[in-house]
Length: 392
Ligand code: PLP
Image 1 (cartoon, rainbow, N blue to C red):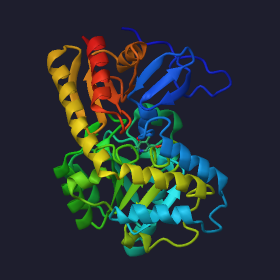
Image 2 (image 1 turned 120 degrees about the vertical axis):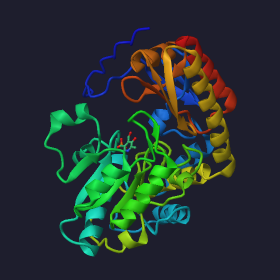
Image 3 (image 1 turned 30 degrees about the vertical axis):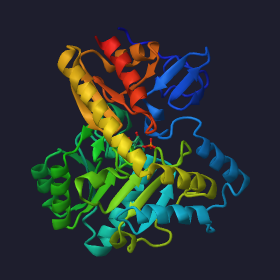
Image 4 (image 1 turned 90 degrees about the vertical axis):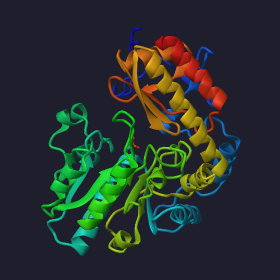
């Protein structure tokens, strides 16, 4: 097995290692390339395409929304964004929602909101943001400072100050909170890019107790693991703890760029007009589409299927890890799984692609599976059979 060399992409800035695959169309959970070859897609555009490709309802809502207002700016109010905020509030701990355009932007907004809240309710020195070992929160200066990937960080120092990484360990976090300088702790309930690590419910509960005891905000980054991916609408529901803020993005608007911050009443009450803004955030077109996506991803039958099929997928990967010498541990939940391989994950990604299955990596030795949430058990089984074949 060898990794396929990335293709040059002409005038595009070469920041992506793209595979030599020109995708031209998609239907259901399959993509087709320029040569007419079909691929089973277990990447979902990196956890974006929860409804797969060509979902008729999604196409319809985009068509009808395109005939209405696309954008008017946040100088004025439009109904679709208000409806979407109401829907997210009704499903969550939150009282208010801020819309933006990506996951990194949503996370950086929470850092600002945490500092505004902390300065208003505590004192001026409680400004630090802590992120966990293995985290990924984005590539802008603030979110990169909260991202535990040395190779992504080193060339761009200095990163935003007042943001640091702490061990994924309650005692270590407690030690960091003792000085009284921390405004917020941010955590992904399931770390995605960091190797698909499900944070234990007991850990999340202890983190909640600790942050509450120290008057520190708890932020959950559900950009990748939220909106049904783990089998509940929000991943945090399964741990039985609520954060003070939560971020969403990836699947929220069916492939259109959109991010969101959900805020508790206490934090929202400290935010004033002018504290934050973005030109495109929560516009009528993207919000109309997101209203449809949120409704679809709230469907109890879809969430049940993600839980039961996801457990089955996990059992298949665990069995592979026990039987095949090239596969080590499998980790995950719902339709978000990773398994460690002894060879570079890029080689498995290439071999799977050659065999008609698209998967991605999460670190050098972890293969990551993120099937569309509409994938059936049979489609998952088809992907598992291809993986078994190439890994044997
Ligand atoms: N947070 C998490 C957990 C992510 O997985 C990602 C992207 O992979 C981000 C934040 C950054 O999102 P975006 O690429 O939309 O800025």
